[in-house]
Image (cartoon, rainbow, N blue to C red; front, top):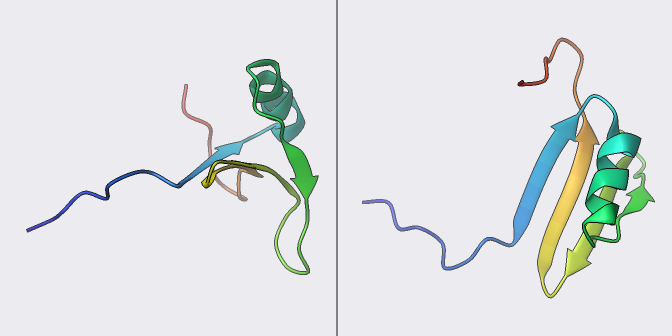
Length: 66
């Protein structure tokens, strides 16, 4: 039987325009900063009280839901 986690600590979304998405969430009060690691794409991320929210670009061949 599946047991749901007690709380959500990570949400990752993907966007065709991560800068525009970050501006939207910044306007809602999430202070996102641009991050890059040795591998992988640049993305935005913030952590508030143990909760992590990230915005990554859509991968090749992926389409945005409308």
